[in-house]
Image 1 (cartoon, helix red, strand yellow):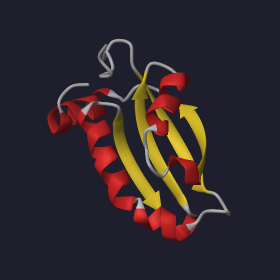
Image 2 (cartoon, helix red, strand yellow):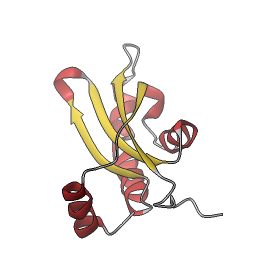
Image 3 (cartoon, helix red, strand yellow):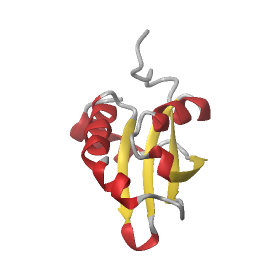
Image 4 (cartoon, one colour):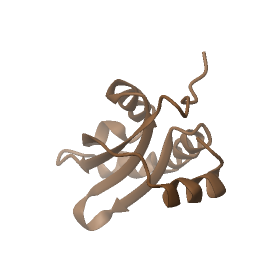
Length: 110
């Protein structure tokens, strides 16, 4: 079974994840390299698009490409740092034609 989303059936979701107050930052820091590797795996598989970090607000924003929120949760659960975050998932509208063309040029079509 392929984990690469079918472009016709996929949607995008913006995930706002904030670091929990009880986070062990030594453990968090130790897992950073693993997190970056997994993000690259997910990007290559067409499951993650944008990823932004706001250290000042202890938050990260991840655009997830998935069929539904259950698939979003499955994708997020593969991230080593997921256990340190509380995540809110927001369904988004499809990208406009200019954004879709840009994404197709920069990453290949989803």
